[in-house]
Amino acid sequence: MANLLEDIQCAGSNTQPPMLDKTDFASWQQRIRLYCQGKKNKVNILKSIDEGPFQMGPVQEPLAEGTKGA
Image 1 (tube, rainbow, N blue to C red):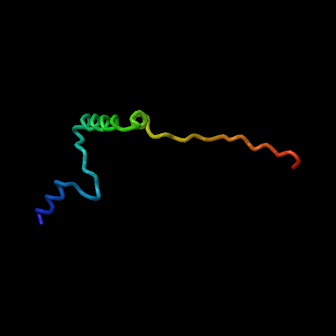
Image 2 (image 1 turned 90 degrees about the vertical axis):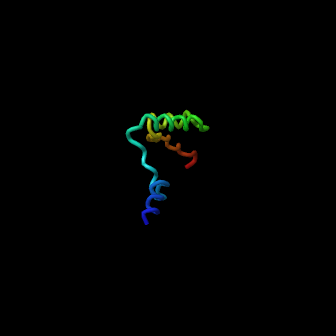
Image 3 (image 1 turned 135 degrees about the vertical axis):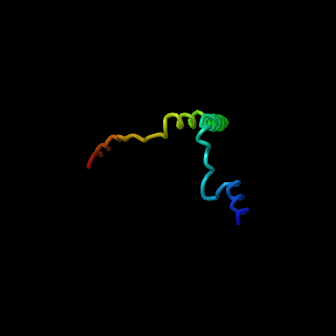
């Protein structure tokens, strides 16, 4: 039974992502940014990381004008 538990701990869990080492944040930050730079929309991805996700503002549409003869 301990052997199975050791295998699960080494491989990671299927229900939870592996934990990042909090003491080595700078290394993970650099790896994630390098990964994003290799993607097609790298500018938009990095902008979203730096500024947060796009927030839709209020939309104002002009009122429809009345039709002639109505």
